[in-house]
Image 1 (spheres, rainbow, N blue to C red):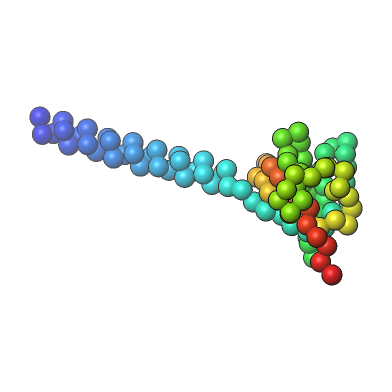
Image 2 (spheres, one colour; image 1 turned 180 degrees about the horizontal axis):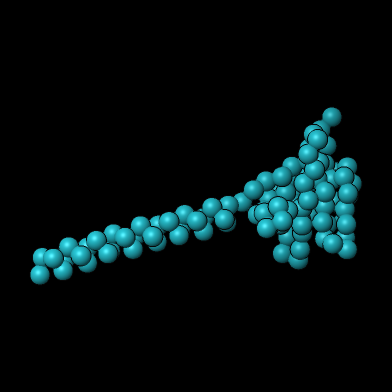
Length: 110
């Protein structure tokens, strides 16, 4: 009886450990990232923005669920033009592009 209890307890610990690893893996993949800079190109046909900061350019994808904000308040998508300062929040896809959950328009820095 004691052996069975010990084996069941060991199985429970292993299962709990595997569940914790799986949860950590899901949390890591669902982590939200941030890309900030100036819009250098927009492509409405592909629903993408190219955002540049320094020498780096990042592709940002937007879709119907992307929220458009200005200083964290709702804004019209038409305000987001080339040379505008933005911060994009979202997750990366398998091609390394940021899929935006929210794109925020910021004041230009002088």
